[in-house]
Length: 431
Ligand SMILES: *Cc1c(COP(=O)(O)O)cnc(C)c1O
Image 1: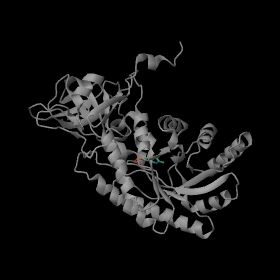
Image 2: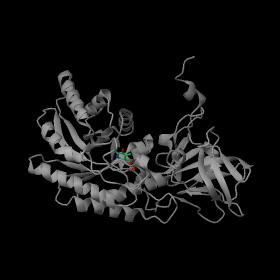
Image 3: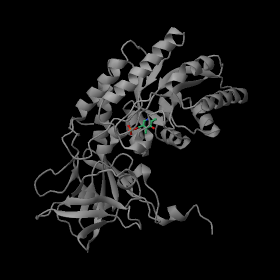
Image 4: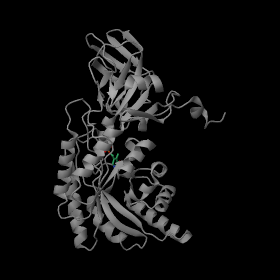
């Protein structure tokens, strides 16, 4: 990686030039790989990871990238190479980590409320760092699978677990991505945790390795992270007094970004976040895990799409693009905002438009009543900050092949996922 500053990877290098990702023109990429096309900056992803690593450098730590945000193998490999661990929520995500970076298996934490026996077995065999356990029933299942595995093989290791506690902290974000209240399906009521730890340490197939918490996603303020960690810290001290010394505290993910194109100082945000965690955890000498997803990859990615038509219906102007809700569902799912910019600016006044895809749903929109610079059919536009929960949540709805993905590394661009073909889509089916 170069010394180049990649916090603003997407830029116009000179007036009249198209939008670039680092040193690569998005126009050139669209010509070469077609549209819709996801383009990511490796440099920015690396830079964001290093911000966390530097902010936590004073203590034992591990940044476990939340694979669900963007699970491209090339991105997992990039992050593993820089020392990251991974937060997974399915056996499939573990398979991805093992395919991209098998040496990172010992740095994996496994979250999620519905782990199956097969997924638990896979993770036990892989020797992951810890299971973030979300219920007592899951803890029993984990112990049973560890016992069974020991009987069937020479693997006699205990299953390392952390209870994912629910701290009952309100995080100001979209209700679909808030997870830290007692009424949510996630975690175990923090008040019940001590009794569960005390019972678990008597089980010879379990090792009480840590405690974890994750209060939600796209949280812009450091305060709720600090508040949740205060409660976790109190639990850690209580357990310590009772003879249960945890080795790790996992603060989860959730640090948010600015989707509105405001001036955004990522380094400052990470410093505030790390300070909130460290303040609450003073006195804990074990390992601090964090699970950022969005913050590492969202602003490192754009979705490049071509304008198919510009259509007037009554008072409205619709810009119809070749990307649709199946490529990027965040606006439809969470009323999320993505800045949209023409890849090559045209002279003229911005117009008020709706930017929509070709899918047969009124929910298939990227923006409503948005001021957009003048565009014509054939022009390229870029949806910014699309690196997280974009491709990862894509689907084949309307039998639309998924987009291709390109990773830009300085002046080089590499196809990391080819565009799907109809054979990919029809392959699994039988008439
Ligand atoms: C989704 C999730 C994350 C990542 O959240 P971001 O908002 O992308 O940082 C981390 N940990 C758990 C348990 C999650 O479910």
